[in-house]
Amino acid sequence: MRVIIKKTYEEMSKEAAKIIKELIERKPNCVLGLATGSTPVGLYKELIRMHREEGLDFSQVITFNLDEYYGLAPDHPQSYRYFMEENLFKGINIKKENTHVPDGTVKLEEVEEYCRKYEEMIKQAGGIDIQVLGIGGDGHIAFNEPGSSLASRTRLVALDEQTIKDNSRFFESEEEVPRFALSMGVGTILEAKEIIFLANGKKKAEVVAKAIEGPVTSQITASALQLHPKVTAILDEEAASQLKRISYYKFVEEAEKKIGRRLY
Ligand code: F6R
Image 1 (cartoon, protein in one colour):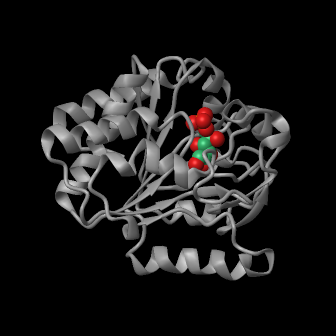
Image 2 (image 1 turned 30 degrees about the horizontal axis):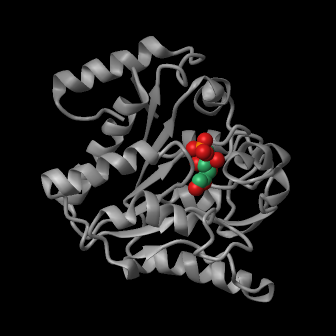
């Protein structure tokens, strides 16, 4: 895994946006895997700025989101579809029909088939070129809570107590946080051609160190990213503060600068 440590959240967001911009310029009809939550908000702001000021063109870009709360309609202010419209889609020239967020209102008896089709759509689009990920306080990626199979696929999942607590900041009360979600699986995520893994803030430092430098375990599903050949973790200094191999990451960064291409 390539680890890039930036001083601030803004620098972290800009670095991630730069990688996505390069992809869109190289492949205008690329497929992006997107995340919600606080972490990627700065990245989305920067992509909107690049669209407005630098003409970054999203007209052929296709997107698939990682997850959606089960039971929330797309127009619910806390739904992830709503989040994406507000924080990214309405600020860029993406076509609505090219954006995909799992539908949290699908009937229980149709969930399995719906999830299978979601994966099928990703395949038909050619697979995800770059997947953006955040990490939950319990080490989850998407809503793959501790104990999720590292081979898991898109499915209906139950949220852990910690995730419900963490995400209650977006709701009026903890009771209002949905208990279930539709989520891409760890196996689905690992099929992305490239992954950008973002984390910021002191609160994430311990779990980030476990995910990047600890053993691969279903108890911290983000640790499965160690099995992927092309992951760039972009962290701010606070989130990186418990990593042990910082001198190694810096060495790789310097070496890459010298040779003008990436090593890992
Ligand atoms: C969101 C998602 C989650 C978040 C994670 C971190 O689509 O899949 O895994 O990335 O819960 O959330 P924040 O960024 O709010 O700390």
